[in-house]
Length: 209
Image 1: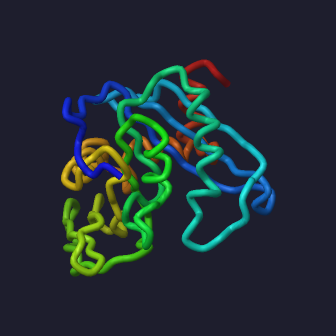
Image 2 (image 1 turned 60 degrees about the horizontal axis):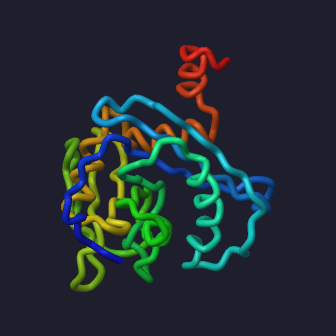
């Protein structure tokens, strides 16, 4: 893993979010990607791939199960993202190989893990105010951030995936957050994957329904 920003910096035009899940009792892996324009955070493209699940569930190796569908959906994109936020862990993983890191190794794009729960590590209590943060540590190594994106919401667990530094991972999640608990890229990826009301409304306004 490269836990530093690219030499040329990160200057995104398109930022994508990815959401991975399982259907039909785990027999099908579904990956959804939403591509947003930055800084407007408007949705410009969305794709979903569903493939037969290729690997059984093994604790600690979930990314090996998820990445084939992510690879499939990534190849469908017409807009090339400059930055990818993944609903899952980056290096905040016992083996430092969450899905954001694993997939980040296969693409030449900076990746960030944005998880809703902690997989490993310890942290001090996070303040109640929006924007409060604490470093997430595993022994003497910082593996991410615990960041409260919204008042009265549980914090998110943010960690670099690949080709991005620790400070930048948090910075870009902050830049992509617009008043919801989740940053816009993963919020839209979840909406696409689950066909949520916001996505249905966007389809109607776009003349797709």
